[in-house]
Image 1 (cartoon, rainbow, N blue to C red):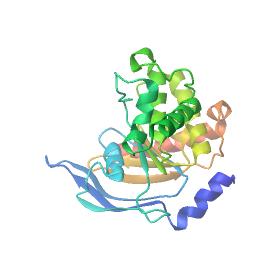
Image 2 (image 1 turned 60 degrees about the vertical axis):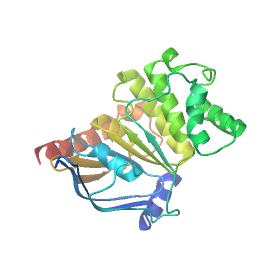
Image 3 (image 1 turned 180 degrees about the horizontal axis):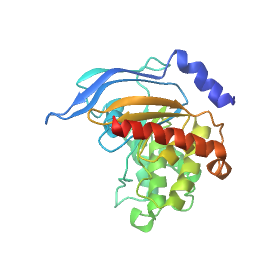
Image 4 (image 1 turned 135 degrees about the vertical axis):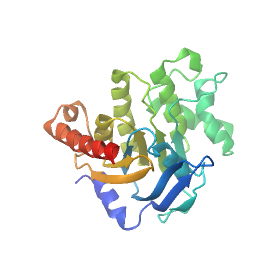
Length: 261
C-alpha cells in the first residue's frame, strides 16, 4: 500500500465528512435523495456513479451547502469543522470579460487575499494545470479543454480540503478527457485534497477512483460502495490492463443493477 493510500485508510476511524440519513425533497414533490449514508476519509478520491436523475449533483450541492437538506445531516468530524470547499461545475463558468489570471484570482479576491499574493498564487496554479503563458488570454481564445483547466485552477487556488466536481469533463472529446483525467490525478496526488467526482462513465470512475459509490434513481440512493484496489499512480498501461477491464466489468454490473433497482 502506498503512503497516500495508507493515510486514507488510517483516517477512516475519523472521517473528514460524515453523511447520515440525508434526504432532499424539492418543492415540486420530487424526492431527489432518500436516506443517504456516506463517509469520506481525508485524501480519498471517490466517484459518484449513476444514471441521470439519481441525485449525484444534488448530493454535491448538499455537501457544499448550496442546497439545504429536507432531513439528515452533513457533518465534518475530521480535523476541521468547516473545511474549505472547491466546486468545479459541468461548464467552466468563466467570466467572459476577464483574463485567465483574473478568473483564477476571483476566489482569492472574495476571500480578502491581497492582490499581489493572489496573482502569484493564481499564476502558480495555472502553471500546475499547464497554462503558463495564457495568463492574459480571454475565455474566447481558449479551447474547451483549456477552459476546463482554468476552472480546475480556480477550484484549487484556495487550497481546499475537499474538491467537488460535477461531471467536469463530460462535454469534452475522448482524447482531451483522458489527458485531463491524467492531469487531475497528478494534481490530486500533489495537492492532497479529498476529491468527490460525479460521472456517468464507468471507465472514468474506475480510472480515477479509490472508491466508486453507485447510486440509483427514484429516489436517489446509494446501492453499492465499491473499493478500487488498483495502486496509484495510474497511466495508460493501467487503462489497457486486465485489472482495469475486470474492475470496469464489476462497476458496470453494479451500475446495471442500480438502473434496474
